[in-house]
Image 1 (cartoon, rainbow, N blue to C red):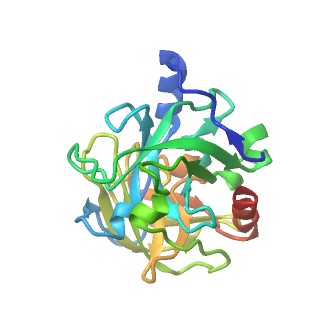
Image 2 (image 1 turned 60 degrees about the vertical axis):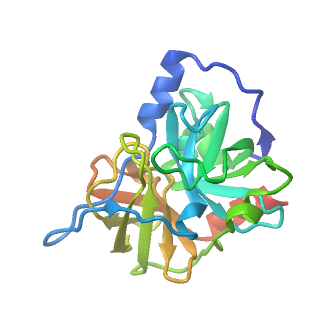
Amino acid sequence: MAPRPVPPPRAAGATALAALLLATGTACGGGSDQPPNAEVAQQSAARDRIGTLSIHSAQGPRSCTASVVRSPGRNLLVTAAHCVQNQQVGLLDGLVFTPGFRNGATPYGSWQVQSITVDPRWADDDDPDYDVAFVTVRAAGGRQIEDAVGGNPLGTGKGVGLAVSVTGYPNDSDEPITCAVRTRSQSGTQERFDCGGYTDGTSGSPWVTGDGTVVGVIGGYQEGGDTPGTSYSVAFDQRVADLYRKATT
């Protein structure tokens, strides 16, 4: 669908909110030999571009993980589509993005979600091959989010076998985790990696190459993964490039 404003924040029904939050964020693992396990991500300027999506405030119920990507408006995030909208609940209201969240600290504050862009095939059918979303956030303190923390370039058409780091926020932790892995093909439209520890809340976590390019986000098949040891992403190909263009024009 085309970008549309998020309705004014309102108290989500407990059942609807619980349903969406239970649907969000799993991931990382499975493979030959012994896959690695994620570890606590040390703070860095690059990792401060990654943060939590939560309801109304940084301390509110968490939905997922998101990260800042470069855009003309300097106000764009990328995450999984199931983190922000699905057929059962609709669009999740009142989301805020808190970059660099760690142990209750919010070094850059929280940024209100303004609009969400998903592909019509996700909006209509929750098609896992289109489980990616671009999210704009409102300016805070006279600055856009990219002015505050910078942004990573978006990479499409890069193929598989890429060395990436994946950093995200499990719902049961106040610190992000990270893992250095290599991407693999799951199908013609899906990719995967293997690493333990990616539980609820890590959907939307960016797959970042050594030069800082985002080439995937946890989501897609099984909404990111049914176990903490194997994570998936929609292949970042022309479909994602087209969605990015829609979100930024």
